[in-house]
Length: 387
Ligand code: AOS
Ligand code: ZN
Ligand code: ZN
Image (tube, rainbow, N blue to C red):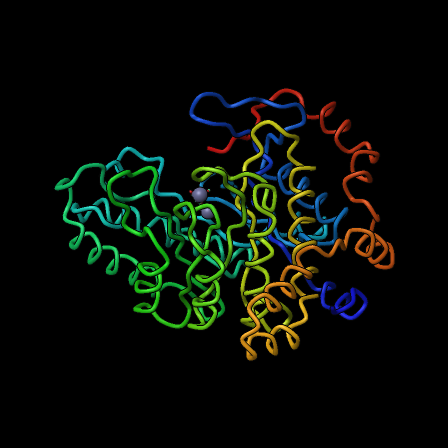
């Protein structure tokens, strides 16, 4: 078994990008609950994201969503974030809240509507130029509800054409990242339902286009770590949207529903060279905190990723490979499980203190008074919400 001290240096550079929308109110289609202290402005969302980073040292970037986070002066917003010790990360586009897009956006049969959706993405790249963001992340709500409703093949062709126009605007230091989702809001067919479709589309675009893997966007029982291995093998894993699910796109705290799955994913990330200073994979959260407090919800999330990363790094890969080569089925499995079952919490607490961070970020946040302060200060105005 590899020891914690042998891998602790590899934890230092870990960076997890938090989503601005995690700090706004969210809910289900039945009810969005308001909560005290919820941000009213983009700046307040960024301040909360910076707080997560201050207590954990794990979240140096906040991902923005256009138009939810639209401001007049993105260069000023960037300076504001940098003054708080974080950067502005991935820019997420939105073609799912406009009546024009009822039957499609980048895939629509009407050229005018396709162009409107393309123009929105070009505007997102303009924002990226000001924020210094590397990634444009595209998630499309497009698809059909009934067999025969649309020409699936034609929609795929129009998608390729629209993406190509957007890709032409991507700068040399920027990337286009295409997310897939197997269903919802369309229920019969989705235009980018799986990693294969996303891969086919981004491979056709070029070397600045990648796949985004949202852990909640697969059918039950899908072996997600296999997809991670395959995309890393192909050099096309651009980013993760981390979250947990029990049923569908639940967007619960990463590592809460199935910590073992998160461990297995991180093992493949490490195995495939997706972790560390030489990797370009972006580790984002895509979560909502419907009933729990949002800042501690985000702190818990980044800590869960850190914990499973540490365990994955501790996997004795030499012993594992030997057992695999010898056909030692149960021996190999035992080595794998040993790493998963290793409790690293005390070691991580001590390591955090060495880094000048609180040993227990959850407790330190609770005792800091920040929550009480924002609950007292952020009265009036309109609280941010998921949409
Ligand atoms: C939607 O289901 C996708 O997960 C998106 O990545 C994301 O939730 C949305 O873009 C939030 O803005
Ligand atoms: Zn997502
Ligand atoms: Zn989702």
